[in-house]
Length: 319
Image 1 (cartoon, one colour):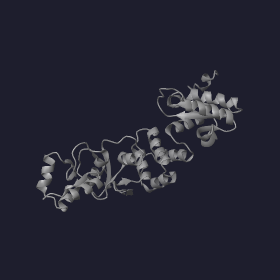
Image 2 (cartoon, helix red, strand yellow):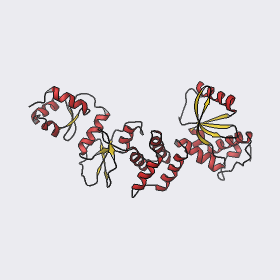
Image 3 (spheres, rainbow, N blue to C red):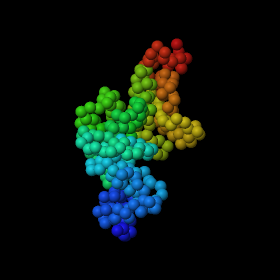
Image 4 (cartoon, one colour):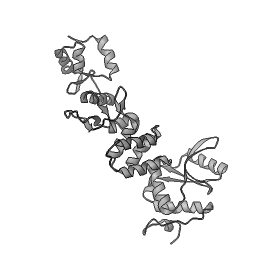
């Protein structure tokens, strides 16, 4: 027996085209009819017992939902898959991460990575997704570098997840990799640091070279509109803007130039702009340049070498 189109089409639309064979049989479909749809190429088998009831390309969301259907009750997207749905990860992962309670056993299937959880984190949505604070921690624990780990935490905070919620979720976990690092990164996020580049600037340029700490993310009016400054050295007439892009084919943009002019005219502040290379590779030279700008603004502090090979003083012509 086949399922009438007026019954199948709305159901498929609601479920991203993904239905289990069990559900189809419950609706009255004959297994032989299901097999014919697959053999004719009208439908596609995604996993054992999970079908995509259309031909053609399969959207990522359909693959993601199929992974949770295959994994069964209480399953939810997690890690990079959840991060993509929540907006923490830009690129859709090819392998779908799914978390299930540790008491469950899920047979391996291509394109799905199953995580067994002693304590299953909360999830929500028709496409079940582990909540943002737990996903941020999952991504933190699986990150290969400190920059990546902090980037995931920053992404969660930018999208509205309170730092306190992430910290509370971490306390609920009996074990967490690199807990001391997590505490440091959350402290930076609480202080207003919003990206891995900003964190490197604070630690490698400012703190290691004895520079004063700038005020982060100050919002003000300039040039007839609202602007937000990355780093403002209040009282010294200096601010720093950080651009995390590895390259900028056109160099400084017209908008950047207009904004810098407005800041100079209306606030009397000079603007230094740095990109990833200046902070990650040439932190000492950058510190020397920032110190020069601070001294010009009346700072009376000393530029401190970060180590025996520090080139900060060399960059400003010192010894």
